[in-house]
Image (cartoon, rainbow, N blue to C red; front, side, top):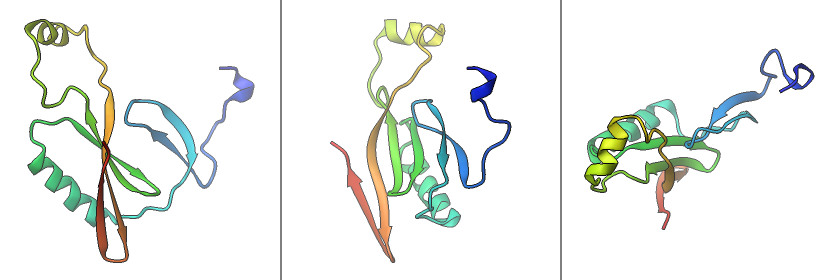
Amino acid sequence: MSKENSISSIPDGYEIYESPNGNVFLRKKIKKMFSEEEKKVIERELQLACKNIDYILDEKAAGLAIYVDERSGKPMSPMEFTMMTMGYVSKSYYDPAFRLSKYKNEYRIERFC
């Protein structure tokens, strides 16, 4: 990237955002649908329910999206396990699984198929 296209600080009203699969963007700040307290409750419940599942909670304008590692919960072959532990496989890909949204005091869960 050339210096003429770079910025020295983040403009007002913008934030640095990293997508679940690792892409980094400069985007306009989004209006948060859930309070910090609500997010903590959701995170705690996910940790209890998804003990063996690698997931990412991503905040979007339409609600909280839950992305699940495509390899989570699936048995690995001995070769896959060896390659992963030796560092040959280091990238995970996260698929969208659910979206949580709310309207007033009504909470909704959408499942992506």
